Length: 456
Image (tube, rainbow, N blue to C red; front, top):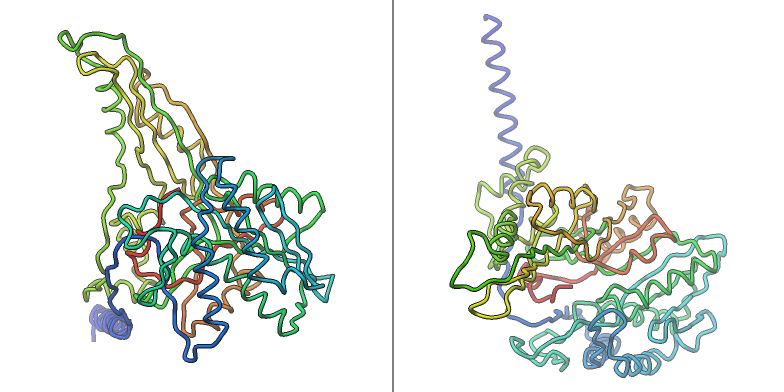
């Protein structure tokens, strides 16, 4: 047989083998459907096989926590009355923690809380579990139940903070309360840090806690904070946030001479700014109604070893997934004009960027200048934070492996991978204490549940 025929036969055999592998992996991919839900922050309560007192106590405690309106409005401006009430609530709800000889407790910046649980082996580096008690404001319009009602119905608890982040506060402290009651003594010392102003930057709460620990020369093995919410009924997959997007907010401004609308010039301040803004491609909000994998898509998702570049392009198609693979841009404010028949002397727009770890603040600013390319548009930086470093996530990373094993022990068969946290968290205030910063919430979500969050 000629050599070219041998080559063709071999190529055909390899192609058949490749197609067989792809087909087998495709038909074995499980993709149950997701359902669409309504509005208003809520958390699904997974009913255990046996309902006991601990389960009922957790539900009752979370409901009480949600009814306290611990709202942060602006930096250094928050509902101090509610936060004082929340302090009293913690003392009442977790009496063992506050009285146990292994626990050292202190308030920080008046309304934040720091617990130290002493371990048996002082040579081991401690770790820190973080959460926050504050929430963003909530108007009752659009909610299925009042935002601070803590309504428990249909297997859900409704209310501001059920997903962000009082479920973490109550979950951590409830677990610690139960363990201490059972005589638990940890081998490794750990801290529990609960900030009170994360929603407005954490400048008073978490930053003060981080500075306090630094002053005491405390080094941490790892930090686990709120973050990725990827446990879903659609796929047996979740991710641990090993990095966090940075952010940049700029103001674009144009100043022109004031004039009358009856004698408009060729270009006005509003027109110049509008053209500058139109050069961006802001992400359009849309609702992901359901996830149903067509056969071609099943082929791709079940064979990422071959199709990962294509998947990256597919992720760009919806806002919920596009934000994972790039820096995003959104025009959030536009102000101009003083009267209906007067040309606006000043036009301003606010633009917010969430910066992917592959880029820096300076690189984004340079792209902004290049994109606008108009000296009449003044660019002013309002606030910025670089993306946080990528934390270790291999099998030698104690924190990452500890979290992974806990997830898989609780949810057998769950696939775990490192990922990017797209929201801003308090972890930035602890980066001087450790290089291992992780973000994860063990919450079941459908894609549309993510739309119940309020932005920050």
